[in-house]
Image (cartoon, rainbow, N blue to C red; front, top):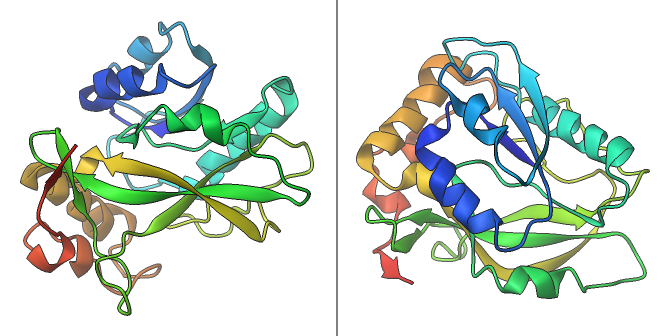
Length: 229
């Protein structure tokens, strides 16, 4: 399942990636003002598109509600599909051949699967390990994005941004051994757009995060040297 807003610049790379492992795609078009909707609706893997009303600014974005809407649709209307992967339009999975192996995992308790997040290099042929926590600053952050499609799972909506993207009440996590490559950080212009989105539109008063200096495009401490695939 994929949230998208004005994502035309990412669609080719996104589709090229997910076509290697996905059986169906569910989108939430979060008020796009470009022709994102017209493109994604024509893709053969697209199963359903939820549309939020068009709006010019990013203000009004609620990540957790968007994920909740897609998740509820899948639970109710796609019961024959075994797995759910939550992946934004500006991310890709690497390597893709691991995804089929992950779908064979079984465990007695509920669990989700984590992916390590990296920023794409500017030439799109490598990645930059995004610094993690203070104790281990070179360790990439792990994002929990994949779980089994079960009707009793639910996703909280009380935090609009930086939300937990997996169902509540799951305590077991397996690491995928895969990377999520964030293409929204691949160039200075994209990093600046991302920084302005948070500081000028979504969270100008610092309600959800006191500072966004960590994603400032000039913050060289946030990114490590590029590594090629």
